[in-house]
Image 1 (tube, rainbow, N blue to C red):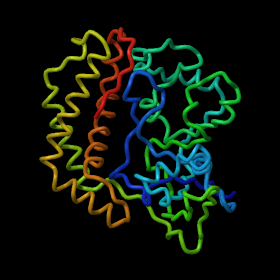
Image 2 (image 1 turned 90 degrees about the vertical axis):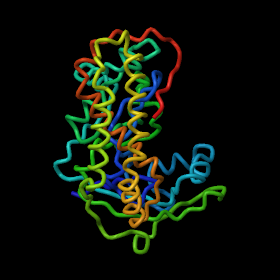
Image 3 (image 1 turned 45 degrees about the vertical axis):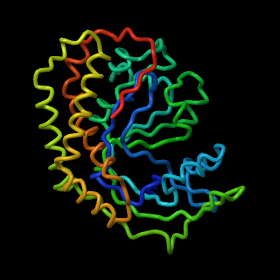
Image 4 (image 1 turned 30 degrees about the vertical axis):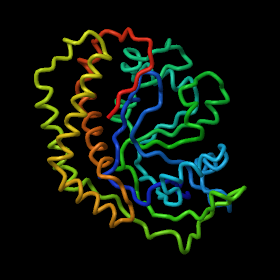
Length: 313
């Protein structure tokens, strides 16, 4: 049986040193998680790279706009291991069943809109401990007109919660002129595709920074008791504040290690800002912290606020 190939756009490599763990929306009004590796099925016909690239080209010039700050001609094609545990979600009923098995406490405690069957969602962070990723049959769910939780996903999507399930990947160059009236992207499979690569574990420098962030965060929050907060928003806003403080301290104290990660990525044709590297690490720790503390957090009173709010890191 032929292996299914997937493609993720905008990066020439897949690396654990920049991978973001799955994390709840950093606001009180949306349903889409942050983090993870986002991909779609890879297509070979001329002018067709993948559904996501088609969407970017078709959606009122989005590709041209994004290409101003992100190189959409760089991508990676990958396959999954045979034992990859991917949950395929095909129907609205599956979403409801998952929301019962993995209830989203951060939605029930902080979502500003009334929660109905149309917008109820499951807890991505908890789900990520049970599965390697999810594949969303967007087209089918959208046609049912029963759930709106994946409306913003736009296409059938693979979202990976970790990189351990990837068998191998290849860097690829997409040839396209975004200024053409009708762009026809293509890949020269003989010239524009690298040899297969394996994904390495997180580097020593990554682990050094992560452990430092953890120690700083624990020191900053050592006197915090979850039960002392009057509602979820008050707690989460405080945790975000201390995450930002840990970010500031680590940015200065671990400047050398951050630069070494940056240089290593650059050697592999990925240029990324130092601030993104350290922010990703802080968010990865935050994801783990929230998961570990969930039994306490879930007992907090619901946020009374009815205003839209974002939590910035």
